[in-house]
Amino acid sequence: MIKVDISTAFVVYLCLSLGVVLFAWIFFEYKVKVKRVNPEQKKTCRCPICAYVYIYDSEEDFSRCPRCSSINKSEGKKRE
Ligand SMILES: [Zn+2]
Image (cartoon, rainbow, N blue to C red; front, side, top):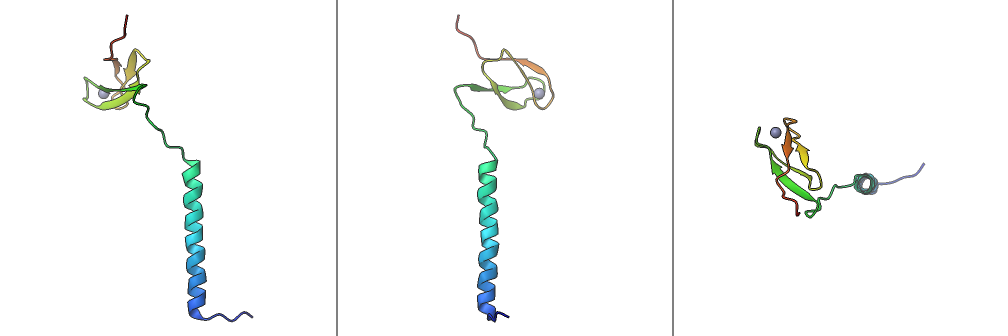
């Protein structure tokens, strides 16, 4: 049987616990992709029904409010 004193056992336990947390952190950091908003392609819209401000794709003529599901016309003017 391996004899270890209490301080060595505590250090090993602490290192293993931190290793598991570090591994889980790195794993979920690479697994979850953060949605990045490109300000040139997205615009904000304020819903006239519920006053909710949301982001929509500027290429679309109409956008749907995520809170009240009303369809709103895009505020951006197209160049003609
Ligand atoms: Zn709304």
